[in-house]
Amino acid sequence: MIPDWETTEVFFSALLPVRHPDFWSRFAGLLAGTGVEPRLLAGTRDVWARDFMPVQVAASEFVLFQYRPDYLHDNAELVTPDEARQAVPLGARLCTSDINLDGGNVVASSDKAILTEKVYKENPEHARPALREELAAILRANCIFIPKEPYDVIGHADGVVRFIDEEVVVVNDYRELDRGYGARLEADLRRHGLTVERLPHFRTDEVVDGIPSAAGNYVNFLRVGKLVIVPAYGVPQDDLACETLELLLPGARVMPLRCGDLAREGGVLNCVAWAIRTEPTRSSPARLPAGR
Image (cartoon, rainbow, N blue to C red; front, top):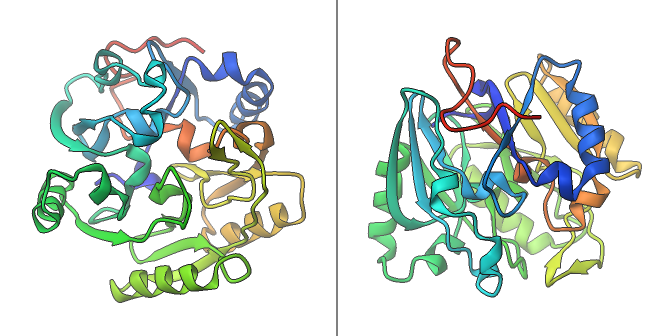
């Protein structure tokens, strides 16, 4: 797998600047002084690029999983077609899999991948042991399956946990909101030898089109190499989230970005970003415009 800290480029749906112009203006302005240049993906039908684009499993190898999320069953117009999902760096190999899996449900280090158990529900035709074995082979990783958040209709791991390095993860602090779920989650992660740290976490009651707001989620930060952009919501927890990540990542540049407008649609920074590693001589993936 290619962990966040090894990524070098980041891509976004071309719809993001159109649907969220104020957010995009803030985001592009923040990135302008970082050396990370945002690029746009053409032909997409939704803004959540992390979920429908291929998963990078090696420096020059990507896997395109089936994209049939149950939360879009009644919104087929939002499902990005395969032809727009197949763009990978020049010279890279693109493999396909019949497993139904969103990229947001794959949280990776170099040799581990964390997924929620929702993957079982999404692939009922696969026996669970066989599915686990196949995913481990495809991802080239030790797969760790965690419970999804109760009542979460999306069920992605990147809203629950992220790797800080090969042995350390951060999770939402569930002690005030759902102590039982948090205890089970942390126990599962520690059982696999991981050190668990916590980021602040709160929830709002806002729901848009059946999807709960992601406001209050800091785990869904964007990390591209040594750059870490943290969702912010104009509350005191914003500072605590950034301070915690600065302590855990002393070599990183940690920056907050107001995300309230985007969060109302159910996701934040990692959700909208397709961050990948490219070779130094490859400036952009094939078939992708360099538009901004």
